[in-house]
Length: 318
Image 1 (cartoon, rainbow, N blue to C red):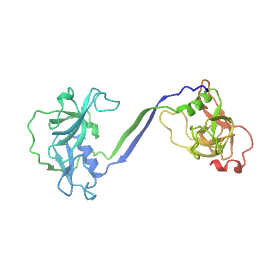
Image 2 (cartoon, rainbow, N blue to C red):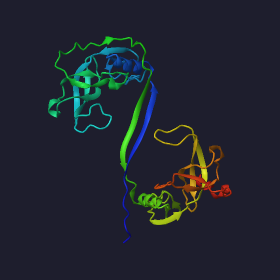
Image 3 (tube, rainbow, N blue to C red):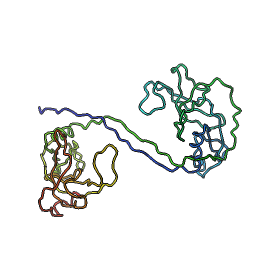
Image 4 (tube, rainbow, N blue to C red):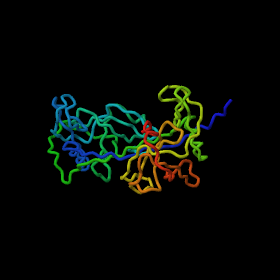
């Protein structure tokens, strides 16, 4: 029987900042948190929505009537989090809670600092614990904590939503940490790259060679088990010029990222083009891989010096 290759795994992180302008309602809400004030908005049916929405949840009409609610409230439901993750409100075990603040008709999701799950119950009273340093973000509420004080009158007060130096934009980091397992086909591909070889797989039905291999033909839907060595040279089929520097990527801009059809392959792969000014890269340019010492994959592709490939030889791979 053929030897089963080691299935590779690697930790991967997808991370980017998401920035949006806030508008009058969310600007007032986040600026209010900075000033230790919790604002909601009154909907068309009279309910007070916290956190406030910009549009009525029933009629979808724009709503702007702001009201101030209390900083204490009642837990409506909860779930215990025994193992906090990176970026969560507390580093020690805590409860995720939905809290209906005094004067509000909807619940706010946040963390409750509690000794353990036995100390949490639906209906318990809690209050906001404000962050020591506040910037105009939901994290200005550090968490909730149990509250033994008296219940407020529950009547929200009107508020103009006007503050000095209002917060007008929000930048929220988005991050996904996960472990990627490429599977047998791509594990064979990556292990070949470590040996400075590029290996694809041929479909037994349409006979196309796919690089990187996927384990199955995307057109015919059948398994691809026959390995085929391709390249190492190839042809630039299309490309883009990158002008924005990526975080943690030590490459000066501008640079070129291209689709490259390796000789013998029926699918173009992605790679960076180097060794040539960015404004001289072109469709049909013949290129070859450049390996760094100890690298497990090509660092970039550079021109071979060959004449450009004829358009008809790669037009189906654009």
